[in-house]
Length: 493
Image (tube, rainbow, N blue to C red; front, side):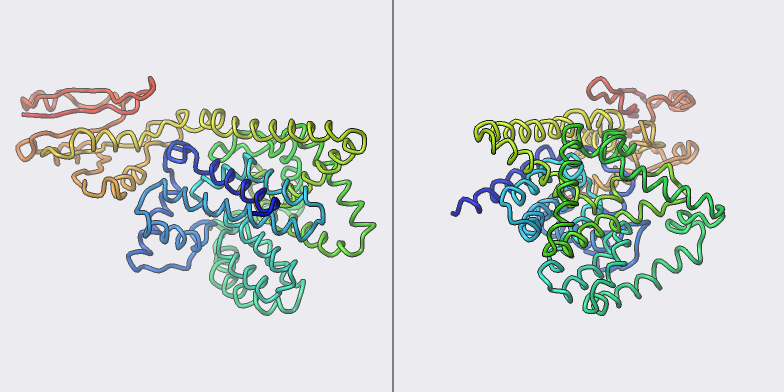
């Protein structure tokens, strides 16, 4: 194997390993959006095809998950494996695009390396959500466009519109070329009349409609728009996304050293753009992609507190790491002109620091910022149910929900765990939210044992009702890592 192929092969292998490492443990719990995609993928496998959006998420992701479900079975880990696979494809595409944009080998090796160990991209490659598809379609569009395959780039642009609403800003690039326009136009028209028009024009309370700020004054809209633009751009370097699901709150995309190198790379980018006519058009393209791929985040003018949003900005990632690679190569070459050994040492130290810093942040710091420090209430309850009661004549009741941080355990998470391939044989459980209904459903004479999983902090549970009926009652605590997960009330004759 050629040395160049060995390098990219090793980078891809590392990108894969870091995306599947502890994939069953980080993040450990399913939550709202993921639960919906779990159900949609199952519905597709049951023959219920869909083309509508759910919130800002398009249907493409659910079909990809359905394929992985068909091969590997239903589980949260398989959804994460789907996004991890997409994340690795992105790394390879970043290599071939960089190769098209630069004649310096080091740049088209460094760009995929930096993306492989980016906290931002590691996180979204394991989120089990369709945001990662946005970057994939951005890179596919760039690949075909830079290779002058305009019909294909238009089709990719059109299909990508049904990945996630964060991609919708890219539709403005259909005017680059008449072939792109013709091949993308049917998708744009379909999207407009089936999603954009009813959402924005007919429903002010819809997912998109409420973001347009219809009742805001014109001045407020302008102020909020440019506030979003500013928040997005500074989030790469100073103050990042507050959302804990995919980020350490407020942590920017780049560390302080990488931010400085990025600005050096951006200056080099501007100089090359001015001096080199041959690359000027390509540079215009990737810069416009950088801008328009963030348009969805800019336009949430009714909710400026939601910016920056790393999910809605993810289409800009290639540009960020390509420019960072440029700055790094510039410094490397400057040092190399003075001392070859020192330049290699500089590169090794920086890349080692970069990889270790991002790895440590994702696998050690980030889990501590998740609900209850990444303790999966729903999964632990399900594992306790299966471990102790699946072979006995027991009836399981799950009473109330959502007593942990940020609403865990979610009922749908428990349901999805129980219908996964691992536990699909077990269905002897009932969700109950009303106390009187729980009392009416309990019939100890028809079951050897009844187990009720409930809020460990509940204060009005009427234990005397069972004692008066001479039902044996035992209360146990389900504890994990010193965290009280649930009360377990066991009733027997």
